[in-house]
Image (cartoon, rainbow, N blue to C red):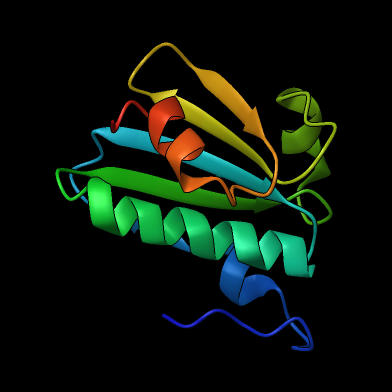
Length: 110
């Protein structure tokens, strides 16, 4: 699936992206609409998951403007925010995910 450009009229393509592969890892990425930062974070995380989590993962993307109640429930104050739901313990990582080594360490991949 290709990511929509920031100029696209709909964010729904990205918002509804949900990948499942035996779901050993469950991740949520909160983004703000179709900003360049959000699209970059999505691309970085998706690439990292494809490379390191072939054993199984679920990636759910949530636009805080489309689903503000979820953002409030999870206490999301900045985007992008990555939440690792599984495996436990649940953890949050805030930022653009450009430091792939940091993200991989956060996900216990290295």
